[in-house]
Length: 130
Image (cartoon, helix red, strand yellow):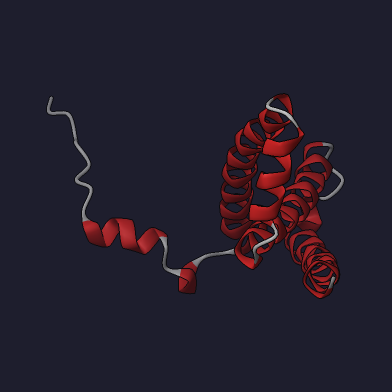
């Protein structure tokens, strides 16, 4: 008996990122994983930032001056949007786990992602106009 080995090729990897044949369930999975990774990275950065408080008010104030840059504000926006996407997608997963949302998975996904986009736009407008 020969064991079959899968050959990973560049075209196989690129097919995974091809949005044309991706269904809603795959998008939900991808968005959930990407937002989870982003929020985990933010958690560690947040802990480092809180460490600035231990260095005294001068260190924290100098850090605050740096993060008022629009690039950092955009990063904060991505964290908020990722939080909405991850949280609302988690609600969809919970409803499916209890058997409530199983027949309506696609509608739940698109509806909750629409809510996430609307909430992110509202928060983004407030963040960038202040």
